[in-house]
Length: 117
Image (cartoon, rainbow, N blue to C red; front, side, top):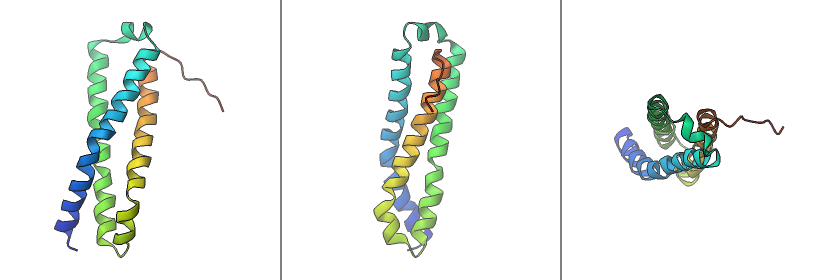
């Protein structure tokens, strides 16, 4: 497989999952907004919305890091194995981004994060 075919395969795979990734992040932020209601309403401002926009763009830039891993793995001798297990990268990356969205939205909407550990 050449680099062009690997990149095309990566684009086909990852772009179909980007909507679900963004939906998970949106749900996390919406739930944290609702859980902290009515206090969260008072914390919403133009600056908060602009910061959420910036973070959403950065989350999508971070999502693109998967392309590097995917293309390199496809060009390696481990291509067949990688194609069977790359869903793990989707799951781990989406979970990590969801946790980050949780912590940021908790800070935005006023609930203090309590350590349970």
